[in-house]
Length: 314
Image 1 (tube, rainbow, N blue to C red):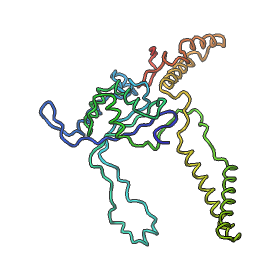
Image 2: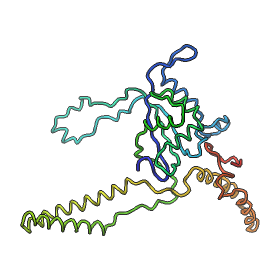
Image 3: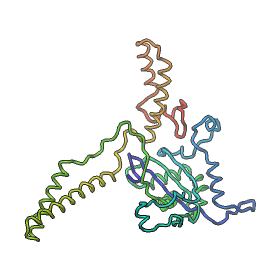
Image 4: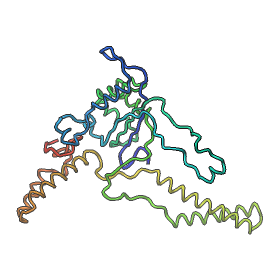
C-alpha cells in the first residue's frame, strides 16, 4: 500500500542539506544544518498543550485545509542496527569471523526529512497539494528549504517539482480513520482449487504429448500443475495486498475537524443535561442539534492545528 491509502496521500521526501557555509548579515558564517535546525526549532507547532495555546502561535501547516499530519526533521546519519543476521550453522561452515567488521551504510551529508499525510484529490499526483501548500506558507517553506542542496524554487510549480524529485515511496502508511474494518477482498478457495486442477490437467496432457509415457507424464504434470496453481494463488494475494485500502468514510480533514468539534460539544451537553427529565432533555437536544449543526462542515467546527473546540464559527 505505497503512498496512497484510505483516500489519503502519504508523502515522504528526503533532501540533502548543503555542506557549504552560510554567510550571515552580521558577517559571521555557520553551517546550513545549524541554520536549518534553528529554523525548525522556531517553527510553531500545533496548539496541543496549554503552553502552546497561551502563546497564540500556531503551525503554518494549519493554514492548509488538506493537511492531517506533517513533520520536518533532520537526520545526520543512518542508525547502525548491528551485524547483518546470518544462520549460525552456515556462518560456522563458512568460517565467518564475527570480529571482522561488515560494511556500514553512511550518509555523505545530513538530510532533511519531510513527511506529510494529506487528503488526495482525484489524481494520484501530489503536485496539486504541494502547490496549495506553497500558496499558504511559501515564506516558511522558503526559509526551510533554502538550506537544502539544489533548492531554487520561487514559484509553486518549482517547489512541487523540487519536492517530488526528493520523494521516496512510503511503504508503511498509518491510517486510523476506519470506525470498522474495511471490506477487503478474499481469495476464493474454490477458484484457487479449480485453477490448480485445470493447470494439472493441462500439464499432464502436454507432458504426455512430449514424453509419450502416461505414468511419468501424470507425475510430472501433477507437480508442474500444482506448482502453477500455488504460484497463481500467491500472485493473486500479492496483487490484492498491493492495492490501497478503500476511502474511509468521512475521513477528509473538514469531516474530521467537524467530528472532533461535535464530540466535544456533545460531551459538554451530556454533562450539563444528564439529570434532565425526558421532556426537557428532548427539547435541549433539539436546541443542541440546531446550534452544533452536525451536517454542516464549515460552521461550528474545530480549527486546524488545535486540540480543543473554541466555539467560534468557522
